[in-house]
Image 1 (cartoon, rainbow, N blue to C red):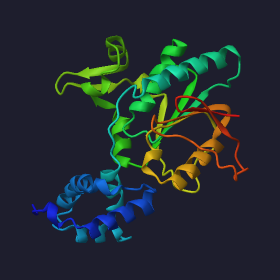
Image 2: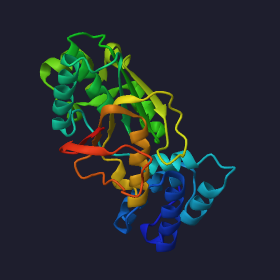
Image 3: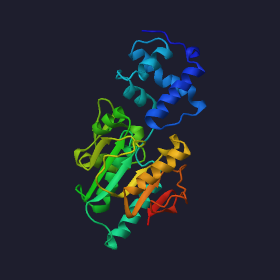
Length: 279
């Protein structure tokens, strides 16, 4: 196994990593992330049996190489858990109840979890909808997408550690998961999994392979990785796929500011706590 020295990860190599990630994902890395990048990529150097970063970066840059997806996966893995920012799910339920009573929804209700990581957000939405409709077969379809193919594979497996479920009640754990005593893990039940479709999607691509619009879009804790111009472009692109009267949820540290020079999209208006409505 090659010996890799942290001191040999130069600023020039870090800059090349930043440029590669930006070009292929739109994600901007802060200079403070150098140590994190080193820790994430050193596993790929070992896997490829390369002992210096310049050689590895050259491999990633080679269009004939298959390393780029692994490079992206290593740098886009994020911590997530069930019912993250729980108030969003409370707001979602309240809004849907109001719309159902007012007969403002067509069925099935369509929800998109953009940047779904390993699936916790999408499955939380599914659980909320099961409980809202009081049925394991609610009239809802959930699309969950991410750029990280390894995260998507884990999402499809639907196996989680106990600490990721800490915000679930005992009843929810029993009802929606199968407990595996051997490794102390919890696997999402097929009834919940059947409500979610997982697909690869890169948000900076100009054309998204989507054929329908959505009643609700979650894109939380994703925009923070992009520069402001890209944030604006992605938000406007998301708005195109949101039905009139539909809702967009952003992360607690994210916001949308309408560009007054852009008249091609309908405005998203803040309702409260990073929840927007499309008029």
